Amino acid sequence: MSGNTNNDGGIRVISESSLEDMGPREKIRKVIKNAKRGDITVLEKQLSDKEQSDLIDEVMSEVRDTKDFTGVDLDTTESSSSGGGLFARFKSDKSGEKLMIITPSSKVDSIDKDADGLKVLFRGDN
Amino acid sequence: MGLLSRIRSRWLNIFSGDSSPGNIGIYGPPNGGKTTLTNRIVSESTDKENIEDLKGSASSVAHETREAEKREQIPIEHDGNKVVIDIVDTPGISTKVDYREFLEDEDFDGSEEDARNRSREATKGVQDAIKWLKNDVDGVIYVIDSTEDPYTQVNTMIRGNISAENIPAVVLANKIDRDDSNVQRVKNAFPEYEVIPVSALEGDNMDDVYKAIATELGGN
Image (tube, rainbow over all chains, first blue to last red; front, side, top):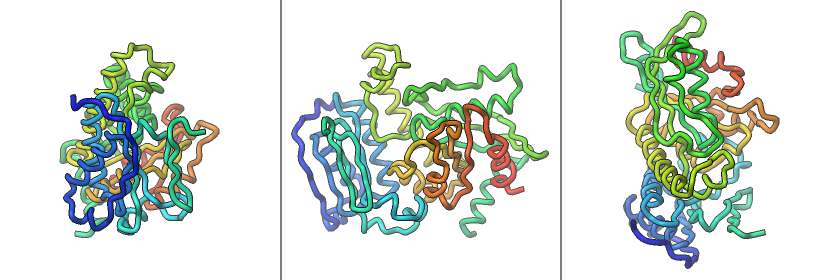
């Protein structure tokens, strides 16, 4: 067991230039560390698809080993109404133009998105 | 060799009578109907006496499939074309697993400790599904619940990984038997594929699934 998560929460924004200085493992470790602390992470440049799958892999290990950590929610600033399919979003290779948000699932009910951006609904919000 | 040629070649290898059966992974988010689809394919393709041994356990409980389950030597026939495949029914890929959601599910009748154990198994299942996708599947049948929003980050991520690995895939818009099914929304999300509307539960349009496997993707 890695121990309990604590309940402090904040928003941590990581700039694109900082992300470029990090390797994939470091990005993932930082995002998970923030989530376990109850913090929301905003990445100025989204993780690649491979990094996202590696993130999920690591998150699952942490869920298994950490009491009260239930995982994360993640999304990017791109509207589902903006046209094009998932393949176009992948193929366009415009990952640098998207923000990615990663939230601790224990604190967040859902992440809704529309043409204007993302809306994080916290648990207990009306 | 171009991408399309590689895809075609890969499928030809899978469906060639001279090669061993390919691993076809059934992928998608939790509760999309993957196990129901797998059971449907197995039931309709296998000798009756073998069916129960090959079926997986499907229910409304999320993460019911907690490890990749392989059903071997499944014959698929359509219009005289016959191929033999191994089907890998994978756990739904998710970014979170909360044991309390098991306890809240009316179909789950275990204790809190049972829920915690199931949660731990589910996390391992998600990891296994990702590992299979990266290393062991030759083709993917991606099952989407057509009553749900397909524009999720997990769908985007899996789609990207499938493309990056050059894995051939078909998309099924499942649960068309439900009034709130929206097949067009799935088609909009996956415009590069032929999206096949199906009800794995009722067996609707399964012929189109077999056709896609045996002919379109088989390259005949």
